Image (cartoon, rainbow, N blue to C red; front, side, top):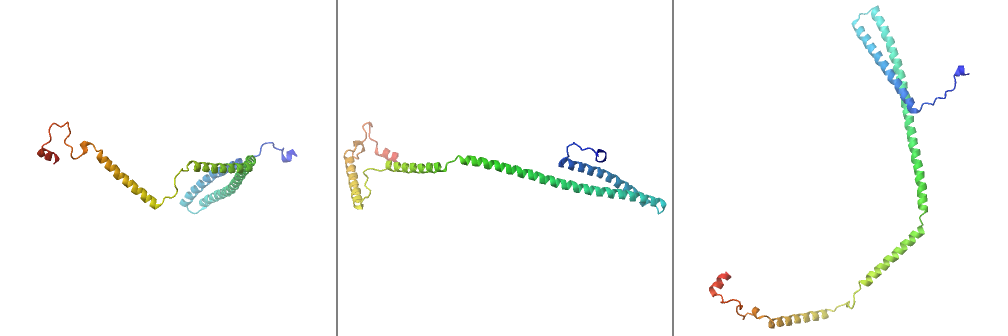
Length: 213
């Protein structure tokens, strides 16, 4: 059996990236061969353009035909390999997307478990009770502020007649204060007062006018 089918290989199977790399290497090798065949065809084309019809020209044509057949064969192989590489690249992208999706799902599951644990420690009844206590404290604080800011012995309403009488009384007090101020006015502020005692001579009338102007 081993002679017919060979022994079972224990070597690790190539992954997708390795397979793509191998195919790309084969494509590069075919490109080198295609370049050589194209250069050979160009040489035959130049020789045929300078030759006359005859057995020699026909022989060159036969060689050119074989080279052209080889180039078409390599071009066909290259197209197949490029298709394989493209299909494997698409499979690789799908595999990467699937891995990213699975990682996202695992992260969401872990987050969900943690959220359940955290919310499980929260007591809604205690939070509502705390909110009620805070509201009561705010009301109590407002009552205390109103009590502290309350005025004492201040009449709430004032009659206009009472206001007029009060203003009239204040006017009389102002007149009395002005009269009292005149009686007690110092001698140096009264009109009949003479010059201050510290001036030796009274100013002359002409000099006083010049000083005033």
